[in-house]
Image (cartoon, rainbow, N blue to C red; front, side, top):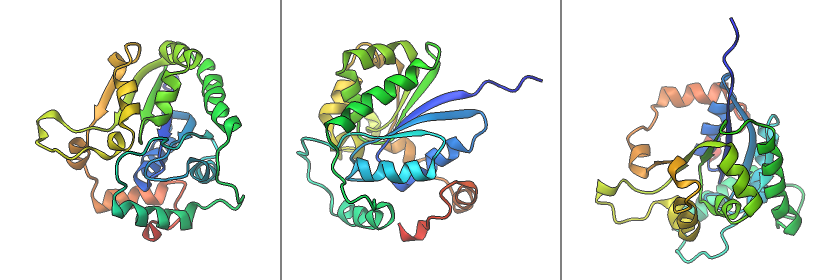
Amino acid sequence: MTPPKKKTVIIDSDSGFDDILAISALINNPTISVPFISTVGGIHECPYRASKFLDMIYPSATVVAGLSIQDVSNEVPSWLFEYRRKLDTIVSSNNGDDNINEDDTLELHTSLQQTLRQYPDLSIDLLCLGPLTNVASWVNNEETLSLLDNKLKSICIMGGNTPDSNNDKAEFNFAQDPKAAKIVLTNPILSNRISLVTAQACSKNVIGDQAWEDYRKVSSWQRYSIKSI
């Protein structure tokens, strides 16, 4: 029998440990190809540092550092400072310089464009696991947006609240960069391909302890201690 054709997924992630679990599950799935991962500011403050970490544990994918949130108008919750501190002890780069420069920002677009051109039209799914800062920058770039229009079959975004949830607290990913969320969600070219996985949907589908342990055992990042996070 002819093996099934692999599904192609590109990922934009702020590199929280839940994102790493999701990426590991996809990369270890023989029916899915993950050729491209970009990092964005959010749970992890430094996309460059996060990209170095993800590049090390996912060598089969092209990993590119993306953007930090430029206009942080919302107060950073206290738990996030401690979370980032603990993450930094794991993913800190030894290169010394964590600042992203103009060339790195250019690479965010050129690397994505090169990846997209390798695949047939409407054959790629985009999975967004963090704030939409990077994706908004793609939308605002005419050449990148044109390629996204041609190549993307669907866009799955982890963000927002369910309308009938009676929750007046903004969901984390959208709250971190609401301007970017508006740009992406209202873009007429991409909006009809977007599916949202809201905070309420995530909370109703939390995996159990045994499933968590099973994922940890088979994932490519098992050499890094979950307990340290």
